[in-house]
Length: 421
Ligand SMILES: *Cc1c(COP(=O)(O)O)cnc(C)c1O
Image 1 (cartoon, rainbow, N blue to C red):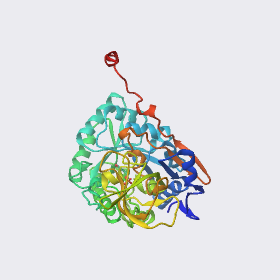
Image 2 (image 1 turned 45 degrees about the vertical axis):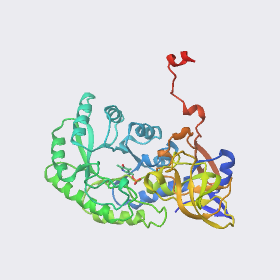
Image 3 (image 1 turned 60 degrees about the vertical axis):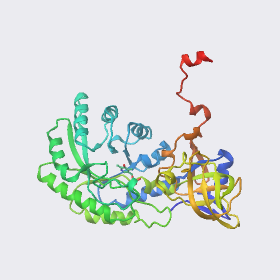
Image 4 (image 1 turned 90 degrees about the vertical axis):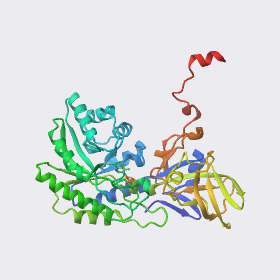
């Protein structure tokens, strides 16, 4: 479900014609629907209403503070993976007691910042990290609440780059070894064991890998409790997929039913870390056609958004729907939609059958709300696109387009170079 639709051939986001945003903002830009974002969050949250849980939105999917604030207002927590994301979460007013900190490479300054902020817990990923966090907490005269992120070794059957729960992945601690890690953690004075966590991968379109992971975690929790270790939280991570093209992922309510069923009698507070499923289909990237060209009977549509704006096609061969902002009756062609970046890998769609578009036409790249802007860069010295939030008939600039002087912010020419000129 989303709020991008056509009225008399023109694309709207909620009640705003997309072309009106272009008139005010130029292209390219990210456009998000407030109604869709809020709906997705509340539907996910409500699906688990019968069991104690916290929905910790995975900030890395879309970390604009206005977007985070939408979820905060609905009682959401946050899953963060860096000091920068902690800063954003706090700026958005997230209750620190609903923040979980994941990630394989936490630095000491980031750990200290999180301890200072009194977050709910760290999801630890290695024996060494356990020692480092204990040491850091000792220096700060604090106790760090932790869960161990275990690697349940289930195959999420998704793209290899976004699968994280197999034993060959860098993430988590092997589930067999985790018992020993817990025993170690229990002896550490500045560590307070709170839970078990996992995250099996992203864009998962089946329920069974989640249930498999949960069952493995349940067996672990039973062993831990036998060993006198209290486990209050079970963090099942994120990863629920969305429809980009023809995928048929389970709905949040089907997902929730399966989890609720499989967790009977467990007596834990669940933590979920959804990212993509909340924001993915709530946003689009709008770009303008610059040129049409053919090389060796291959059609190219050159647009003004590139891999620096949306890297998913280049990085994961990801599919994004391409829709005209204004539907016009023209013949269909098969074309590659490519950006202006000087890389052959710079494309938004390949071999796509679409209506011919002409210079100046607007194009919407669909399902761009997750891992879109957050992965944007300044490659080729392109200012990053603005982000716009629509609510009913109004739109709000929640991030300005970068300007050229933003591009060189913090750069400096040392005096010895200046002397030469
Ligand atoms: C990326 C990530 C998520 C969110 O994944 P989605 O597929 O966007 O739901 C949740 N938890 C952790 C630990 C992650 O790394």
